[in-house]
Length: 270
Image 1 (cartoon, rainbow, N blue to C red):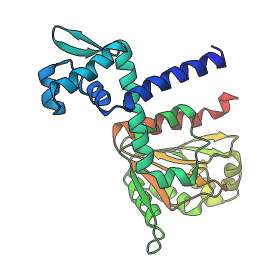
Image 2: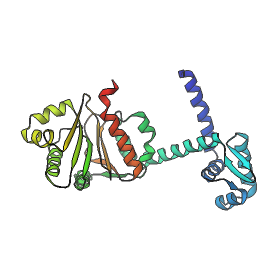
Image 3: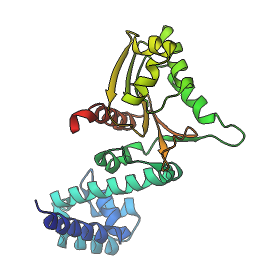
């Protein structure tokens, strides 16, 4: 597929999306029959609009081959289903970004793969936690509380932080944390090796599985089977420990798991 063809197709898709989103009625109709076909009475009750308005919208959508009528029931065509699915994804992406706008605006997202950026809607239910002038450690304390009850952890650790290392070693010595998978850079590995306490407590601990990557990552990710936590770097390359996203629903966990796997295999992508 050539770049020109790709751009042409994108332009065509944009026109379709624009055609839908510029009419609240067309949008609402597509969403109304997204999961189930409905007749005119069903649509009139759900949308609380007169029959003439609804029929006009349906006629427009039928003309564009997004909707078809079968035995008095209206349903999406294959094109309509694909368009509506992408429209929902677009709306949810916008919602997820807007909900945590301060977090996304202020940070470097260059190490998050493009496909996961496109699926940012999976994080629509995460909580945005930030520190305040009256509580500078709020974000870290919430994070500390979160991981203290975990049985297993997977972490992308892009910084050399004694506070984090000491906490992890403390958890590993306890009975709660059974396993820890760490992704760190060569630079951080060398720094840990120079500290006997960290070297013994992390690198030589049988509970720890270590993956070392060449790249100095700009993503601090922690995930388990019950939660995910994400913090990033400022655009000036300094790590920001004052803002964090925390999620515990299945979609957020799937997103975090995908990010972890991709960063884990980053050396194999060369």
